Length: 557
Image (cartoon, rainbow, N blue to C red):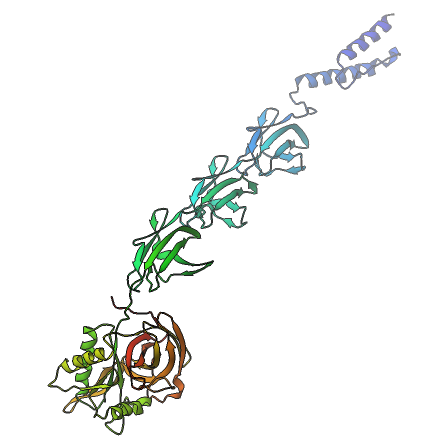
């Protein structure tokens, strides 16, 4: 019994020293093994001492925790959430890896941002130990497009300026604005303007996001047309002047004024003035910036017309004649005294009466004039083809003025015809159209010269003096190749009050001028001829216009 009690006590003490790894049971059945029991007991006491005195628990598992300062961010690639990882309550950054669960990819660094709206889940890994999971909501950004005005004028000047914001942040400079009606991108800082009235719709894009649409109305510009005189005399010099305004602003210089031609035609005026020689009621409107104005009417009342009476003076001159510059100077004075009434045609003969460097292709025409009048040359001025005047140093303008008076008496103090001219050139060919009106039904004839201004040539001035750079104007260079200067080309009968139009052409290549001719310095000088006896013709009226130019009818005021 004593031995059995001792063994039971050992079993009891052994159970008391057991660790968490299990309970060791010892059973000693035989008393003769006492020595082994004493040895085993010593080992167990040592194990108990070691377990109770040691601070290291080598078999414990670390606790890894992940958290963030933001659980909701904006999906703008700027707003971000910062992560915090602890191990057993201690902050740690390495060797921690944060994993985005949605894609199972590691996050770079200890923060997260995105431009895609969604809910993202994350966890941390530390020494193969996984942390808890957390979620972050990335909220979609809001793009807002605004305009400083919703209404502009369709005048290509008034402008709307846009502003684009992303969650209250101004991103206008980086945004793109789209006009829906015309899908062309424009930058907001350029604004928007138009000349076409209408309602325009826009939206903005930024970082792949799109704003709501806004509308801008471009209202039509109000164009008004006014005239200073609603009634004029149909004499081709009394006139009305138009004024065009766009929303009160004077835009006459950029507007187009239209004359309506019944029943449904129209013609644009050359400027903002209107004059006519036809009695009638005329209707006008203006166009500006694609908008049409109100209509205005002008009443042109009938008056008895008198065409502006002008004169031709054929000057027979020579570069070797020292008196010819004197005649030229007196003729120029006469032109200033009677503006738009004196037209000079200067011919240079060669061989029979004198020699001139500027004789050119019309040298024979100059000789024909002198022979026709049975006079001598130069200096010689022939008024209206038949009244010769010689002018020397001792004379003044008096002989010329007397010749003009005689020409006026021959015309019964009035010219029966008026001319309107339109000229063009093609290469060396001069084409011109002349429209004729008359106040007396009669048979009329016509002739024309081409004269050049600014021809530089030597000129004798008296004694041994020669001006090598003398400037010659009105130099007759070409003429019609049909008819002759004294009888002209037959126009037939022109009825009073009706317009008759004829086309003429001069091919300059067939003329041997002996010099270079500048057509931009040339003018057409033409005249009509009529007869009182059916046999002898005299100049009825004269008109002129630049080559490649035009001239309207001229009337006495």
